[in-house]
Image 1 (cartoon, rainbow, N blue to C red):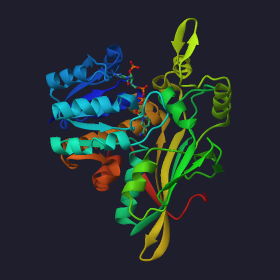
Image 2 (image 1 turned 90 degrees about the vertical axis):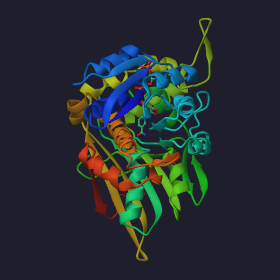
Image 3 (image 1 turned 180 degrees about the vertical axis):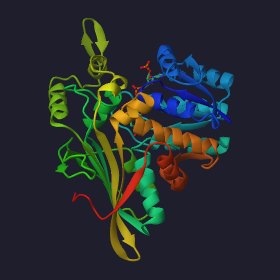
Image 4 (image 1 turned 45 degrees about the vertical axis):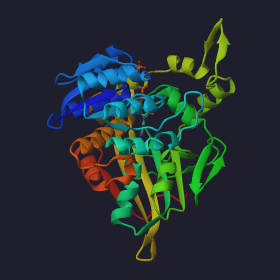
Length: 397
Ligand SMILES: NC(=O)c1ccc[n+]([C@@H]2O[C@H](COP(=O)([O-])OP(=O)(O)OC[C@H]3O[C@@H](n4cnc5c(N)ncnc54)[C@H](OP(=O)(O)O)[C@@H]3O)[C@@H](O)[C@H]2O)c1
């Protein structure tokens, strides 16, 4: 029986709230707070049981502290935006409350997401005797746990990790993003980067492309090498790792639109003067694009996200592929969200559940691959994201 404060009321939050509300024996009291209270109320109205809602600016630490003190949660689930991470961690420290998120901190004025800012909180969380769990989404999150599960049960040592994220869903729009457009476009237009023997190898944005026949008849998409935040933490936490890369599928229409938008300056994140007002082009573009939370009823098809992992077992090189497939329409039928929000929200809910059940404990700041993968893998099967393992590679990369 625990109280939980959920911050943010977007696509991912909707799934987290649905899943937590359906498990009252763990999540006995839920407060959903965000910048726009009406969005919290709209999510609350979809549920079978009452929850509390509130307005909060998560960039305002005193306001957050007051909210946490008045509600008294055991855990804060941060499903607002990466810009809020440090402010919410500050408020958790001040109130002695555990913290969980799905995306690492990113400064608003530079598209440079890395863990150093949050890792710097480790000693303070340790001293305060509270846990911060970072990256409890799908990627990072499930993909990171897939790696430690293979490490624990299938291989003696992991050498190569390729994380592959395929979205074969179709929402019918010529251009829309499946999660927050600003965060999504900043991520996709950044330079590619992969981790090799302790160093970063940089590539031009979306310049390395492969194609493969995705298992379970998902299709034959093009996948592109990208930087993704779990490469940094896996490089630190998987002993013996030689290389980690991340690949994501994109359709031709999405890429063509992105190229044109980039060429005309619409993806810029610096301020420009417009009609006597300062605007950030990417934020203006976000206002024009479909709200990711509205894609649910229109999106058909499946996601396939997995890790192809090579290493040694009893001195012999072996490769395993571990993956989940998720159906957009099935997600919508269950929690009124498409699969991108679902595949992020369910792992956030499971991470929160394991913290509150004290199956995952620790004082300090931890990435999800630093805790025992087994209870999380069991819960993925139990709560909507079942996984499978293939013995042997599915793609030559
Ligand atoms: N690990 C993964 O697999 C993964 C995958 C996808 C997304 N994510 C992460 O999940 C998080 C949520 O994504 P999403 O697609 O749900 O985004 P979203 O739909 O844009 O929702 C973000 C929510 O945060 C609220 N918010 C923003 N600034 C705030 C502030 N200062 N104070 C209070 N609330 C604030 C927004 O309020 P308004 O409604 O007022 O705008 C909105 O409700 C992001 O951090 C994203 O990077 C992780």
